[in-house]
Picture 1 (cartoon, one colour):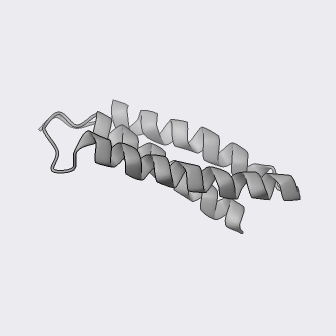
Picture 2: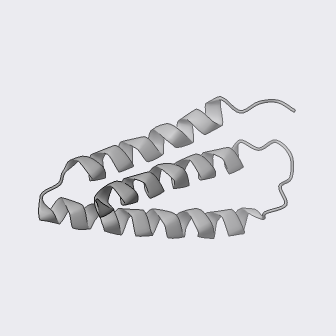
Picture 3: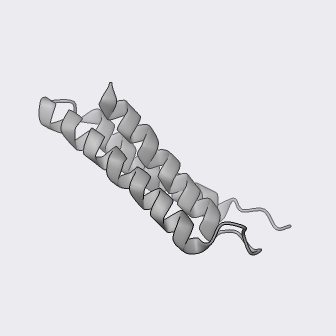
Length: 82
């Protein structure tokens, strides 16, 4: 179960990073703050998925890694002009 929580954290971190990078305007949250937040969530999610992988659950690691990349790309390429 913790592996799927880690996969969710990886996907959310990827989406958050892609959303921040695609922002056209200045954000109230500085870039370094978003970097620290998403890096922390990514590391925690990766630890959870690796623990699940070592126990024998392969799917959360694959879903988390691919999902994070897909979520970041989705956020960047579907950004709206405001």
